[in-house]
Length: 98
Image (cartoon, rainbow, N blue to C red; front, side, top):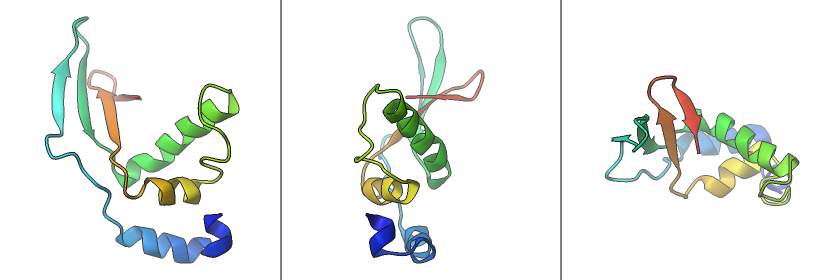
């Protein structure tokens, strides 16, 4: 995996230089039919630990992804470095929803 090819410290130095892709028309605020107001925005590097935690949870509970898809945090960062990712955040509570 990524850690076997690139040591963690070297990977972190490389990753710090990477710019994540952003969706041109975001951020946007939407009001859902039920009245919930959400902010939809491009994910940032600060979001990555929480997003990995969510992916790991659905893997561990058998709700989606397989362990081989995102085996470690560095592998997750490497595999998503050039992928458009968005975050949907409920404005009233600042809870992230996917």
